[in-house]
Each structure stands twice: as C-alpha cells, then as structure tokens.
Amino acid sequence: MPESGLRTPVSAPPAKPPGIPLYLGQGGFGACLSSISPTLVEVQKTWPMTHAGTGSYPSLLAASMIASGFGYARCAARWGRARVLASAAVGVAASAVMFALATGPATLLATTVCLGLCSTAVQTGVMSALADRGDQGRARRMAVGGVCASVASLTGPSLVTVLAATSVGWRGAWWVIALVFLALAVLLPRGAGGRTPAAGPARSVAGEGPLPRAFWIVASGVAAGVAGEICVVYFAPQLMAENGITLLSPALVLVFYYAGELSGRIAGVCLALRADVEQRVLSASLLLALTGFGVFWLVEPPVVRLCGLMAAGAGIANFFPFGASSASGAAGRGATDRALAGLHLLVGVGTLCAPLALGVLSDAASLRSGLVLIPVLFVTMAGLLAASRSPHHGATADAPAWPRGNGRARPRSEGGGGA
Image (tube, rainbow, N blue to C red; front, side, top):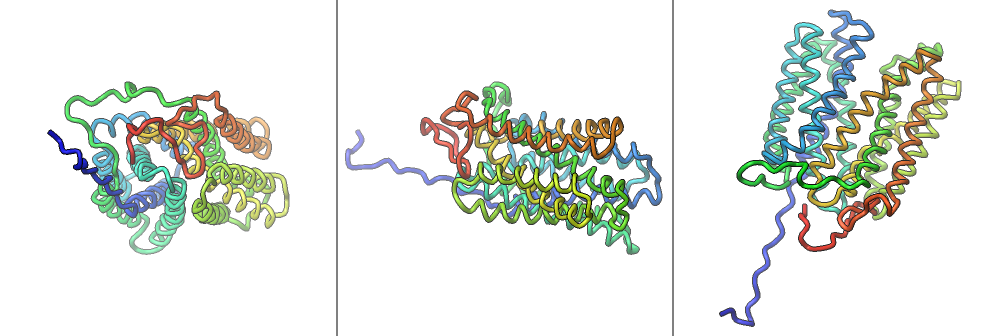
C-alpha cells in the first residue's frame, strides 16, 4: 500500500545529443556537392564533354535527391536515424573514392548518382537531428548549419582548384573528402538523436498519418525558392558572358554570389538569436532576393550588377535554413524525419524542373527573357508562405499553420514525443 508522503521520482529528460558533429555533417555535405563543378572543369582537360553531358550532372543530382526523399523516412523508421546517418556517410566516402579513381565520364556519372543519394540522406538526417534538439532555438541551429555549409562550399572548390595545380591533382581533393566522411560515419551517430526503432517488423511510414496540409504548403514554397536559387547559380554567369563581360570568369561571378550568401547566413544566425524572427527573416530575405536579382537582371553596369547578385545571394541564403525550420515546425512533433524527407523530395523536383524550363524559355526567346522565371519562383514562394499562415490550411495544436519564432509548437497534451 503506497504511503501518501512518498513521491514517485520523475526521470530526468534525456540529454541532448552533441551538435558539433551535426554541423560538421552540414559542412561535409556542402563541400562534396560544391566540389563536383570544379572537378568537371578539370576533367574536361582530359575527357572533353558536350554541354548536354555537363548539364546532366545537376539533373542526376536532383533525381537522386528525389529518390532519397522517397526512401529516407522509411529507412529511418526501420533502422533508426543513427544507423542511416552512419551508412550514408560511408556511402559518401565510397563515392568520393570512386571519384578519385574515375577512369572516364561514365564512371563520374554513375558516381554522381551514388553521391547524390547518400549525401542527401546525410543532410536530411542532420537537419532532422538539429530540429529534434528542441523547438526553442531551432531556427538558430538551422542557420548555423547553413553557415557551415556555405563555408565548406567555398572550401571544397578551392581545394580542388589548388590541388589540381600541383602534382597531387584534383583527385587528391576527393581522397580528402573520403577521409572526412569516414570520420563523420563515426561522429554523426553520436549526435543523431531520434527514436530507437522498435523491435519486430518496421511500421509503415504512411500508417503514421499524413503530414498536415500546412507543411506541404510551406515545403512547396521553400522548394520554389530553392529552384530559383539553382537557376541563379547556373544562369547568372551565362548572362554576364552573353552581355560581353569577359573580364570575369564564371567562377569569379559565382564567388560574388557565394560571398553574398555567406554574409546572409551569418546575418541569419545573428537574427535567429532573437525570438519571433522566422517569419520576418523569410519575408525580408524574399524582398532582398527579389530586389537584388532585379538589379542584376535589368541594370547594365557590371559593378552594379555584381552588387545586385551579392544582394540576391544574401537574401537567398536563408530560404532553406529558415524554410526548413518552418516546415518541420508545421509538420508537428514526432514527424521530423518524414517532414525533412518530404521537403527534400519537393526540392529535388523543383531543382530538376526549373533549370530545364528556364533553358527552354531562353532557347525560345533569349536568356534575359527566360530569366523572368526566377522572380516568378520567388513570388510563388512568398504567396505559398503567406497562404500557410491561413487558419484554414490544416493547423492543429501540434502543427501550427505558421510556426512562430523559433518554432515553438504548443501540443494539446503531454503525450507528444519530445526532442
């Protein structure tokens, strides 16, 4: 018979997994994907490729992102996020070794598919783990991860370019990437968090219930913005070249863009230290991206154009980190893996279709005319994010139509799964 004076001890909440391995994972993802483009520049000195052949690489990456978006949530539900992250990191390391040992363009194409599948799983798992560390401060953690990815996106291509000028050659950069991801295969599971898979047959992911409509609206808006970003990266250097500005190489044009992106993400981290900023940061980022791209697109002086491109990069920089934070908040507690997988699926579709559509428009008219698709995508993102705030789009107690601040959701009961 229990004594009235005794209290049942309350178990302490589980310790949050360390965040540094997750940020390293974001950096590794940025480094490996950004190293593909300079690698293609180097290999064409030995293996000439057509423009169609070169353009197939981003399309394959987008297609592999779609496939990874379909499969990640099921794998995480069956084996747990930690095992998926470790396996995906080993897969990236193996892909990097295949890059280093490539004997021709066909090998590089096959390896790109493997790299896209595994690296997307790494990023999805890392972002899910960052989101699951708690609602408070989620936007800040996403922004810090974005800064790590931006810094690594400058480091990877620089490593390829520098080593290509030495006796080591461009292949040495991929050996370095392979070693980095072998280390991440050990480190990432320590910060993975997430639920331990139950014993017995894996549950059907679809059986957990559909994600709320608000999530799909936010995720579609983020996908539209990221599709616009990809179009800027691929077609901005071509616009400069077609207007006779030959003093700047395509790589140097992108340096201006990535410098703006890095400054925007650093500013995003600073802003995310304050409460109730997610919505305002995304709105300000869209306005800055539209204004900056408009200057780059319509103004003639090259210096002013580059300033506009940097401003556009600063705005675009926070589309994905803050958008992913909003999407995971709209999905509700316990659905982070499925939400981030669905987001990557939509982003993959957008990045696959948008550059192709812009290319068709440009061939039919001109590149300057075809670039109208980019502001259309940005406006579409703004419209979808605004629509997601409507109370008629599937808001629930666990999944608010627009996550306020750093994504603090207020569950209806105490039974929801925590981070």
